[in-house]
Image 1 (spheres, rainbow, N blue to C red):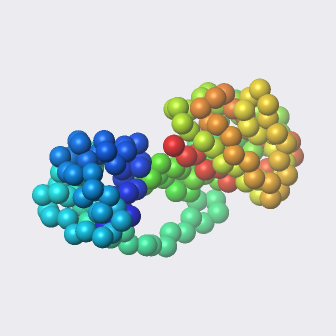
Image 2 (cartoon, rainbow, N blue to C red):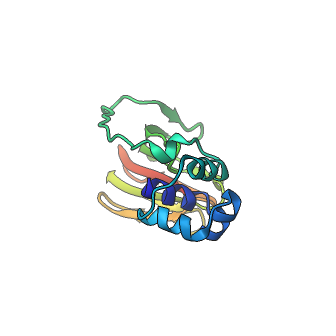
Amino acid sequence: MARALRHERTAAGLSLSKLAQQAGVAKSTLSQLEAGSANPSVETLWALSTALGIPFSRLVDAETPHVAVVRAGTGPQVAAGEAAYAATLLSACPPHARRDLYLVTAEPGSARRSEPHPRGTVEHVVVSAGRARVGPADDPVVLDPGDYMVYPGDVPHVFEALQPATTAVVVTEQR
């Protein structure tokens, strides 16, 4: 519960003081709850979940780890209209996180130009095959297999395959 509470507060962009104020809970109590050194009442948990705008269960249900496999060539795929570029969604952002995971396949010819995503978006890219020019539209970088790059996704950006059968893993993260 302590980890879930801390995660949800951080994801909401709230300080301890602000969440305590919104929930009508003492800041010291909230601090102890996040540290795992206090046992909250049901009323306190309801107040916190309401202030965070999340279901009560998100604070009390232990997340069960599970195994998920997406076989190559399966999964929902979206192709670009103006470039030889396709993105397969490997993992959608769960409610308590702010990220999506894609497998990108691209061919040389035309670059995939993306408009800025919402403020605070960051993209992580690992090229697994081929070669690509990736990053902010005004300053992309050439990546080879195994290269990793992170860049702001809230500015115009580009992904351009420089070799046939270029593939990459892209993680879009909201901060």
